[in-house]
Length: 211
Ligand SMILES: C[S@@+](CC[C@H](N)C(=O)[O-])C[C@H]1O[C@@H](n2cnc3c(N)ncnc32)[C@H](O)[C@@H]1O
Image 1 (cartoon, protein in one colour):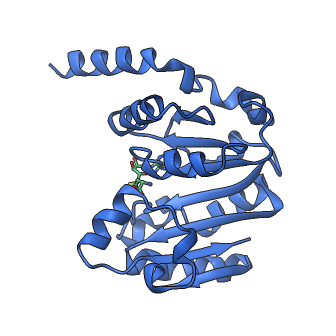
Image 2 (cartoon, protein in one colour):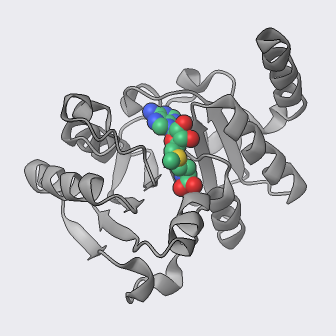
């Protein structure tokens, strides 16, 4: 039964293959070539079902957007959403990323979005958090000098940890709030699936943008 489900998934993904990047490690340094003369290149790491990316890509049609997601079932929804909305400037990668430098060359990206990353609450799993200090340093390396990392989460523990790691690695905080939707930064925000779910439950959204 499980095998049939996986096969079905593969077939559905293959039908949407135009939007998938099958050999992502070979695209290192060449991502812009996937888009029609993009002026900027952005990544959402852990893009889930793609709500954020599809809305964001619509707002900035001249930029190229890359969504990386390790779970095939949610990635499939992101692909379907992109096709339904006829959005041309997004490509997806099916992968659990370990080291971002394997995929992107130094200075290749203009911005990285980490939206509602898994909190990995146990201390012994701290290195798995996408905002672990060494990971932040790697993101910095693949970003342009003015490029940013934007983090949103509802999770107090992950946010406190992220701020500590930002301090430890010497990144510069550009914007920060513990209640995004009551803040001056809210107007520019595109909401994600998880964000809408947590807001509906009355949880404040934490946000930090660094460079
Ligand atoms: C809690 S969901 C958030 C989804 C979406 N960003 C949102 O805000 O609605 C986190 C997603 O990140 C994915 N993820 C976690 N670690 C990842 C990694 N190292 N590489 C790719 N995807 C990852 C998970 O599979 C999951 O779908």
